[in-house]
Image: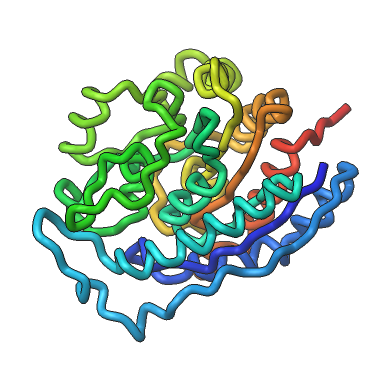
Length: 302
């Protein structure tokens, strides 16, 4: 395995500060060491440059039909990330992207989505991320990622971030337990597969993760996996920007990542997002992010 780590220290897409330090926290927790222990050739490509929110007006680039804070800045960062991910894949490497808030997934998927091939997406998250500038109650782009990728989010008449290689029927959200009212309606009307925590309670994390992965890989050329650490219960991952009680346990998370590893021949890109060291307890969440990445790339007990 040749893995290229790319950091995106961005918190423009969220309300709470701190996730911009996530990439450093994950690196400090020993990400490269754990991946190299699996036999991977792990190269750190450094960080994508991100403007400081204190120096920008979140609503400076206003537009009719909704609100998306820092949308011009977010678009520029995602474009740079797209290019970095595309270069890594072109060099035969698997990009491992470290966030930062979840809006960075728009750039990761854009770089992983070859226009001549189809890409499936599995999105492990407490939230649906299916809002648009017209439906969002907050204006935060980290809650619009899936909509943007599927071309449903219009930013002043522009659908930047749309990845035509990704079809709704090849997108699966896993572990969802917190959605807004309009977002819920939009998800129900879509062909996106949504597996809530109730599904995991009823069927178990391994079965749900496997079904989601089969949906994302069935008939597609490649797979992207996006792991938001708030997917886990806050008791396991306290250092996240938007914690929601009732998430998956430590062992359930590892079993799901082990299912990802079973599909790693299909895996084109992987990302870890929303680690917030300010809210963490002795870097526990960043350490857990490293462990889960190792499981996704093939670590086993035996």
